[in-house]
Length: 144
Image (cartoon, rainbow, N blue to C red):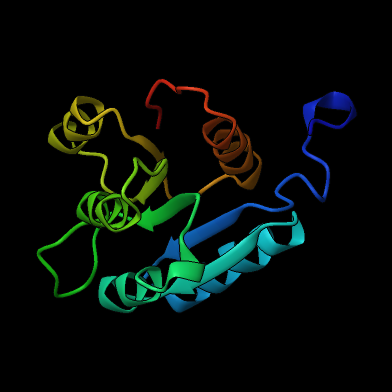
């Protein structure tokens, strides 16, 4: 729900469950706290496996995923995570990939997959705006 000036109100995310997967503990905590302050229910994890195990719990199905692109020591990426969560949920899951990778190859990969992505450091207002549009069923042009 936009507030005057286009900002989202503190309860903009009320009722929405978001899965956050970020291997940097401080970034994960900051993102989780920000989303909770906006009324989202947040399940935050530092790695793919615990996030998937949590998602298998029938009461833990997310409505969207916000994920890092790369995970230390892992071949799987945030794109793979979004696909696996969608498989577990039995439906497409909107996702936002957060990355520090700005190579042309990576940007083409995101655009080819029609994935919404943001570059680190992430602007919280832009993230919230993108997330709300995805949750409302709006398609976003990939951006960075």
